[in-house]
Image 1 (spheres, rainbow, N blue to C red):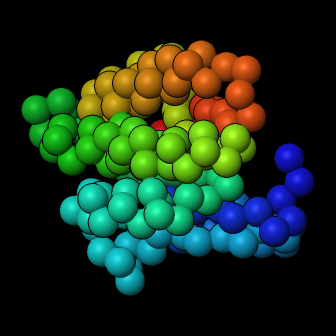
Image 2 (image 1 turned 90 degrees about the horizontal axis):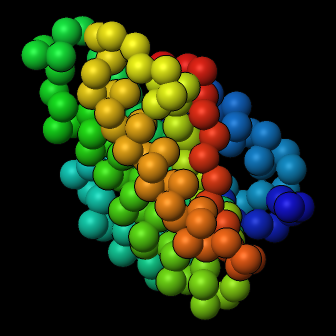
Length: 160
């Protein structure tokens, strides 16, 4: 898919591997909006506002990259927070753009997963569960959207 003049909305685009990806998209001619936690606040807390914005301003491409993990024993992990950001946020943002993409008969949704969804590692219990849930969601959605010009992709990152 050529990126020139395509609108892209990305979460997790202000740090880590997201910042270079955003620059690559811009260099390819895409019009990129990155959710910025420093300016916009916590994405989980602002999910309804963000979904509303995307419903009314559906991008050509949605990239769900925001996430975090905790390397610790399960009993020490904040499972609600881990699952909310790594699984529920991408699911809700995907839901928000589907109507617009279907109406336009085009669009791409890219959910960033993790190899831990396939090879569960100890001390990443919540993260593993969230990414496995995201994989299941994306697999089902990809089949649901099969044969259309709007598609959902899951990329498994080796980064935990």
